[in-house]
Amino acid sequence: IGVVLALVLFVRRTAWGTRVFEMGIDKEWNVIRGAEDPERVQTYPGLLILRIGMSLYYANALHVAREIEQMVQIRIDSGDKPHHVVVDFSGVNFIDITGIEVFSEHVKHLNDKGVKFCAIYMRTSVLNALRAAPDLPQITILHNITEMKQCCLMREKTLVLGGSMPEYIGRSL
Image 1 (cartoon, rainbow, N blue to C red):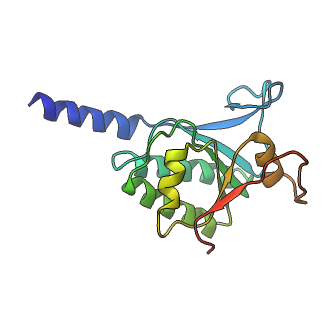
Image 2: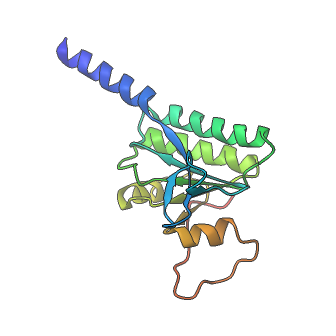
């Protein structure tokens, strides 16, 4: 009974305890930080930066996808439709097949709305799991803030000397 109760409590905590946070760029340090302090953090019109706080798997993947959808819809309703959603994956250590499937459907849904999906700070294990997914729509993998700004904010794409380039995984739609 104790093992079953522990499993139920674990699934409940992770499924409903997962949070998606809106983020921005720290004005002084040029790092991703929580967007609740507008004096210190810069947010950009048309760009929604989010952070997932834990691994994605069968118990919480749908909840996370719904939270992201809600945050996108709130921005659309406010008149600031994002052209890019950048998700900070630094808090995601693991993703299972259910998480990949939900993630894939979520990216397709955003693409249908005209919103490009990007991921930043993705761990190698998560990136490899997504690369192995057969039906993953194309997503942009960003490696740093400079790439994010260049890819998502600059209308004219120019190569930053000494900078890295975004990586694209999945198939083009």
